[in-house]
Length: 269
Image (cartoon, rainbow, N blue to C red; front, side, top):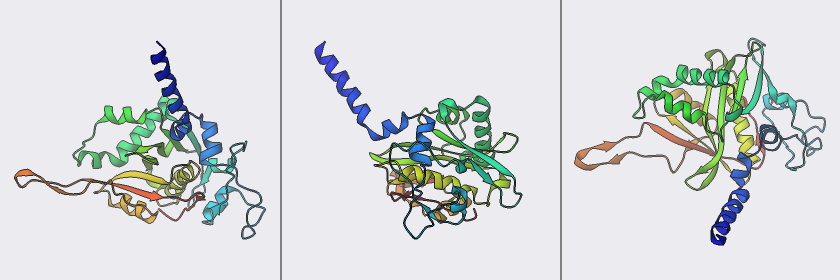
């Protein structure tokens, strides 16, 4: 009895002290405030005006944003929750929502967007398109979504991310990033990736963002490379097999190391 209790206590202690587990247990408001978009410092170094404009203006200027790292910070900059299309001037809303809090309507919309933009790549791969498996993955409790919605409330784009371990290394994994055609090449893709970078920068001991991309998706590969992603050492490589066969991967695992500061960039996608 005492031995079992001791083991259970040890297990609880390990879970409670694991930094990634702690992050994943935070509610969405805490996650936004402490990891996604902490309130920026109103007294930055002299090279930046102390009267900082709203976050989107800093993003559009391509500036690094000095964030507060104090866990007691009570607010995040609310300006991150809107984005204006540079060609149509239509304003879209942005929101972070954990998988468990995602409505069935929004979940279905995200699934349909994946199907619209990536089903062909899945079908051409050795993985294949498996709707049930994909939906189960999308419901993973540790996943968080950043939704982009039109003024009518329709999901027009999203990215999903998770703080996790990949072969023992703490990372922010980008599970998905998808945009409707009219939102592509607008800077929105870079903005969404910048949020993932901010999460990594504000979630020690994480120092890396990681993602998987089909090799046939040349457009996505070019986008990730332009954002600083390179092939990760754990990415599979071609191998010679028995009887003259050869394994040639149809995907690549890419990663980008981040610094302990939020770097934002919205060059055209």
